[in-house]
Image (cartoon, rainbow, N blue to C red; front, side, top):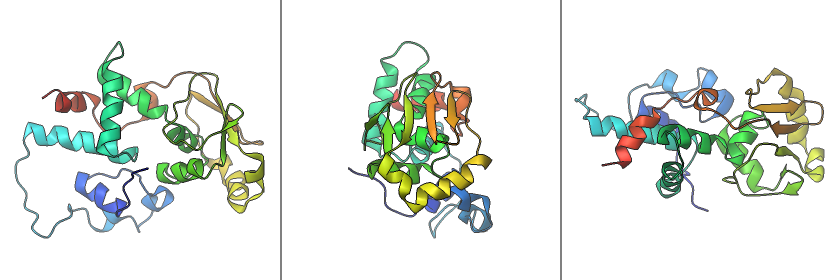
Length: 207
């Protein structure tokens, strides 16, 4: 499964915005955006960015935020385009419904990349069935919990101690004692709290 393995702090600097890709580290002074806000590259020069360039930045923000490569991200866009309604909003909803994102939203991981790893290692059970596919789409009524064998490892114990201080979006519910979440309804673009413009992404792919 292809994925980006380079330094993620460079991605935030490239977009000139904090994308919260490293979890708790992004809230500290160790965050690269706190120390070096200028984009990467030795020969960086300020220049006027075209409309096409601005659209590209918005698309890259979305891609970096959800940890996806271009080919996979474009497939999600095509799926959103084929649905009824506003394509940009449809795209956000599809991205939010990814299993790795839901694991992150429930507070089982500090970042989406960490959530992706948890799913890949087979620690998560979706509606009673073990799954290791991060891009698996959840639906209303699904439950997300931990595999019984995984409840004995140290990471699970750490999550149980830290979960009380984490907020859960309104479209999800969480049993904090048993660490079992449930999808109450489909997410909305407002629930996502996104840092990119869906319409700019539509315009980018429409050219």
